[in-house]
Amino acid sequence: MQALVIVAHGSHLNPESSTPTYAHADTIRETAAFDEVREAFWKEEPHFREVLRTLESEEVYVVPLFVSEGYFTEEVIPRELRLEGWDPDAWASDGTSATHATLQASDVDKTVHYCGPVGTHDAMSDVIVRRAESITGDPDVGEGFGLAVVGHGTKRNENSAKAIEYHADRIREMDRFDEVQALFMDEDPEVDDVTEFFESEDVVVVPLFVADGYHTQEDIPEDMGLTDDYRTGWETPEKVNGHYIWYSGAVGTEPLMADVVLERALDAGADVEAAVEYVREHTRDAAATEA
Image (tube, rainbow, N blue to C red; front, side, top):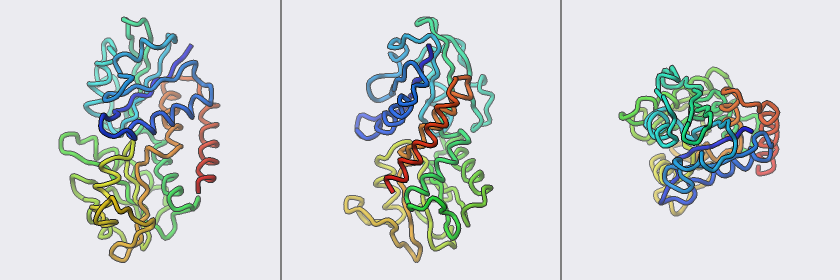
C-alpha cells in the first residue's frame, strides 16, 4: 500500500488557510493513485505529529505545500514526523533544487519519501501561467501582457526570494509574456511600485503564496493601489497609474496545484503517471468552466 501526506502550515486565525490543501487532496483522491491520502498542518488539526499514525500503508510520500525551502521544510516537518537520520544535506539543494530523500519513521514502522516543497518544482511555473490564464479568462494570454510573480521575501531566509526569481526566470524563457518581473513585499524590488517595472499596459500579478489571507487579500492589493481599503474590494482589471492590473490572488488556490503535488511524489518513485495526466486534463476543464 502507498499513501500520500500533504503537509501545510494552516492557521488558527484564517479558516481559509487550509482550504487549498483539502481541495488538492480531494482532487488527488479522485485519481485513486494512492491507497490513502491525508492532510496535516502545523497550526491546525490534524497535526504533523500524529499523521503517520493514522496510516495503514508502509510506504508514505510526504509533500510539503510550502513555497520555499527553509525552517519548516528543513527543521519543523522532519522533526515532527520523527524522520530518523534526516539531514538537509540529503537534498543536496542549492535552495531551489530539493527533490526527495527516503528515510525511516521506525516508531510507526514506515518508509517515508520526504519530498521538496511544491513551490520550487519546475511544474509550479506552469501553475503560475495557468493562474494568469484563469484571471484573464484567456487561455492564450501573453502577447501584450506583463507578468509579475510576487513573493514575501525576507532577509531571514534567502531561499524565499530564490523561488520567486527561479520561476520568473523560467517563465521569461518561455517568451510568452512581453515582460516578466519578480517582485516582493519585504525586499526590493517591491510590489508597491509594480507599475514602474512594466511598459505593458496590461499586467497580470500572481502572488506565489499557498493560500489567500492577510498578505494576498489585504496587504498586496492596498500596496499596489488597487484599493485604499481592502474591505471595499477592487475591479479586475483595476486601472493604476495608466496600467490595467489583473490581480489573481494566491497561486496555491489554482486547481492545477494538485499536479505539482503529484509531480513531487512521481519524482520520489510513486506510481502516479496516469494520475498526473488525469489532473492536468481535469483541472484545465474546471478552469474553462469557471471562466
